[in-house]
Length: 155
Image (cartoon, rainbow, N blue to C red; front, top):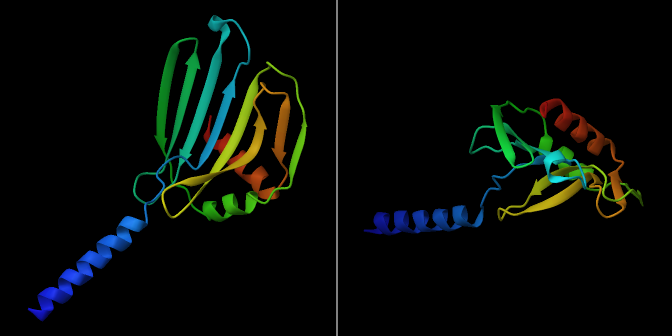
């Protein structure tokens, strides 16, 4: 009886611990581009998402849109190295903020730093979205590495 009670306690505490750690399963690196303010039939956009987590296959998902027509392409990848550390280090910046034209084409590079509760913190690598007149560039060496990695995988 004591063994059964001990086993039950162990299983319940293990379940409680596992339930408190929810892994983030979304993309960790993202690049989006858009054509800016144009007539609908000229409108284009691309979104590239790079996933790396231990529960699922690592993959790159590229979604392209022209007008109202959309295509999605997925490829499996093997990511090695300490991507999480590079993302965390890029979060420190420094960041350069400057004026930019409005209504033009846009490009946004971002990374997501996972939190233990399943949420994430968005890390700006480059935000030149072409809409609000502000361009934000992360000037850290880690941000440059991550943008290069995104570009190499989002072809």
